[in-house]
Length: 143
Image 1 (spheres, rainbow, N blue to C red):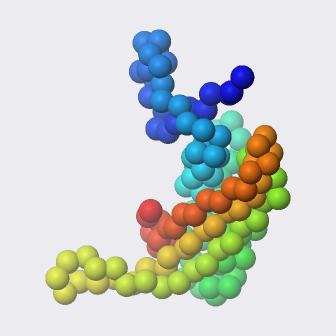
Image 2: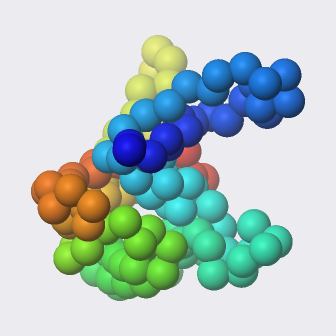
């Protein structure tokens, strides 16, 4: 029997009114969970201070080098994924950081740091390869 995985965003009203909530497959569920981890700061979830990652802690840090930031983000994500996403095995995280010019309106551009994240691994249940790609702009964080 296949297990149900609920898709995000969760609609509490569906549960309360006994309606069927949207579901997704295991790969989509893992991707949703990784997104929650990457967009949560440590301590945001009161039931577990270890849920989240360090992107929020370095969001306005202009003093660290790009290599140092890349290393901090990668280490934080690997630790959080190993601890909180137990459906994945052989987790590898690749992080790249580059500066990107963003067009705001005519004549106004800003330069932000773009953080590209690639998570690869194996889905334990199916032994399938898994890949997840996401990017953020930091200072302040946006996606």
